[in-house]
Length: 130
Image 1 (tube, helix red, strand yellow):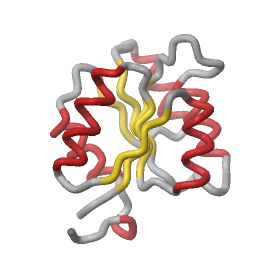
Image 2 (cartoon, helix red, strand yellow; image 1 turned 135 degrees about the vertical axis):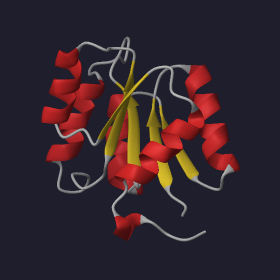
Image 3 (tube, one colour; image 1 turned 90 degrees about the vertical axis):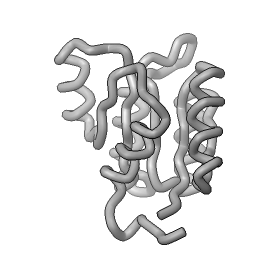
Image 4 (cartoon, helix red, strand yellow; image 1 turned 90 degrees about the horizontal axis):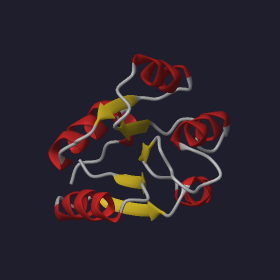
């Protein structure tokens, strides 16, 4: 199965690691330079899944606010959202799940683990055979 991932992280190393791994396996990757850019890309490009960090330093919104916006929008509300974070306190996970998070992974997240999680959250209708 192939899919298109919208990756929302401000960390260059994560962008490189995750996008290189996804592309090497034949998947598409869109990279947003922040949550507001991600909202525009998600509405325009219709990714199969969004992967975002909670912490978005220097941005006007964090990953949880992005998640809420995506889930409220009729154009993007169906798109699964996976959060990757270093925030292991239960209240962050609970807040993300209440906002509609489909997957919550604690850092460090190996690229293959991220791909497994993406496959887990994708609805069968969104999967295509490579």
